[in-house]
Amino acid sequence: MTQGVQVAGLYVQDQDEALQFYVERLGFRVHTDARNGEYRWLTVQHPDQPEFQLGLFKPQPPTVDDATAKGLLEAVAKGAMPPLVLVVEDCHATYETMLARGVEFTQEPIARYGSVDASFRDPSGNGWKLVQAR
Amino acid sequence: MPASPSPEFAMAKMAAPSADRDLKLLRRLLRARDRMDAAPHEEWPVSRLARISGTSEAYFARSFRDAFGIPPHRYLLTRRVERAAALLRDTDLPIIEIALQTGWNSLGTFGRTFRDVTGESPRELRQRMRAMPGDLERVPHCFVRAAQRPDLRMAVSEKRRRGSGDTTGPTETEVP
Image 1 (cartoon, helix red, strand yellow):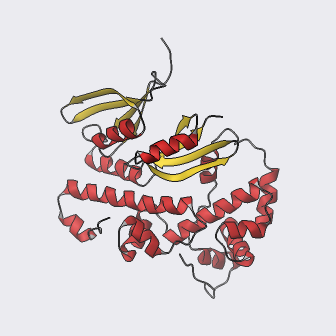
Image 2 (image 1 turned 90 degrees about the horizontal axis):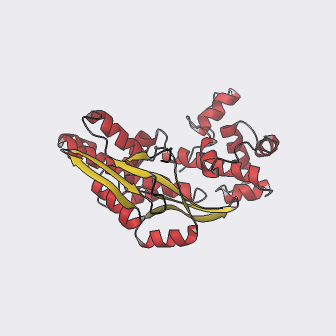
C-alpha cells in the first residue's frame, strides 16, 4: 500500500452543483457518491491522480449545527477558504478549454516567475490557482 | 442579475431560502472583489461594482463592508499598494512607471499614499525588500503577495492624521 493523504475536502453550498462543476467542467471523475439520509459522502478524483480524492462536502447537521454550517458556507462564498492549486501541463490550453466549458476565471493566464498561472472559482466560491508545471 | 431583496424582506422569509439568498449575495460580492483583484489599476466606482454584483449602489457599499470588513475603495487601495510593492521588489521599473501602472495619476499622490499605508516610501520599501533573503521562493507568489497585503483598518486620511498628530482632519477624501 501507499501511505499518504487520501482524502481532503472542500465545503460546497450545493453538492449537485459542485459535482457537475468538478466533473463536467474540470474533468474530474466521481470516486464515491454515497448517501445516508440527508448525509452525502461525495468525492471526486483527478484522472491522473487515482490515489487522491477531493471531497465535496456540505456542512450540515448533525456534523455541525445550522449556524456553524451557515458561517462555513459564508466563508466559502466570501473567498476566505485556504488556497487550492491545480497543476497542468499547459496553462493557456487548459484555460481555453475550461473557459469554453463555462468556468468562472478570476485571472487570465499570466506568464511570470518562470511559469504561467491563472485563477478560477468553483460555484460556491472556492478559489483555485491553475499553475503550469515547470 | 436580479436585484437583491432588501434585508428586511430576506429576514421575513423562511430561514433556509433566506440563508441561500445571503450566500448568493456574498458570492456576487466576491465576484466584484475578484474583478478589482484582476485589474486594480482600473477605476472602480461603486456604480461599476454594484452592476457586477447586481445590487443597488447603496446596498453594495454597505454589503461589501459587512462582508469583507473594509469599504470597497479601501480594499482597492490595499490591492494597488500590494501590487506596487511587488513591482518595487521584483522589477527595476522607475517608481513613476510603477505609480502609473498601479492606478495612480501622479507620483506625488502615489508616494504620499504609499507612505501613509505602509509606513515607508516606495524607495525605502524597495531597498528593504531587496535586502531580505528569498526564503519564500517555494511559496506560490500570489499567496506571498496576499500575505504581504497592507492591513488597512482605517481610512488613509485617518491614518495620516493620527501619524502626523494633525488635528485639522483629512485634506482629501478617499474616492472609489
